[in-house]
Length: 204
Image (cartoon, rainbow, N blue to C red; front, side, top):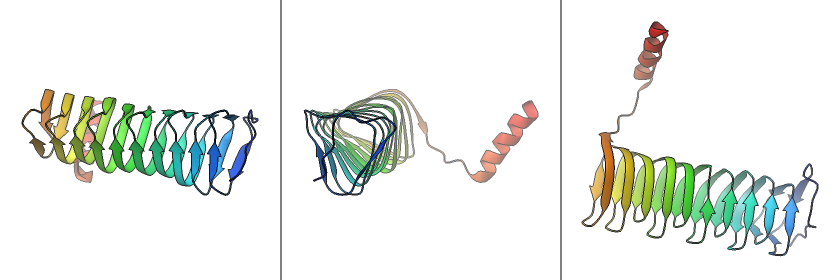
């Protein structure tokens, strides 16, 4: 385990080469680069890049941008994140721009959420989003905001969606709730996008 002193210079980059735990009594100011698992139970003010797994514990707070292969959020992330797999647990809070291949969300999420493959919203999840978009979205919790599902939106019986919805296919269970407007998702081809740009140019 690598050891870090608290109160780092914000201009420094702490290179982490083994599994690291930042305990609840620690506060680190500065950017962190890690090649293994990083577990944060304290507070980090700065950007984090982890080539393996980032875990933010229930008492952990991160204020900064995050890039990781995998991320598990039990605490609070005040910043954007890009990763391959993301899990936001029941006690987790995350905001701003969120992008991952696959997501399982069971906490509090705000901002713009992009799941390149799929998003699973579990029963405890509360999402207030500018936009929630993915190929397949499964909702068992609460979602407020614009939802775009290019393949399938599935709302289970405990699920609630409120806002503008654009879907290719929708599946709703008895007891589920959907309030707002719904339209059919249509993927824009390159030719269609060129015509849109030509039309804008003519109007200008």
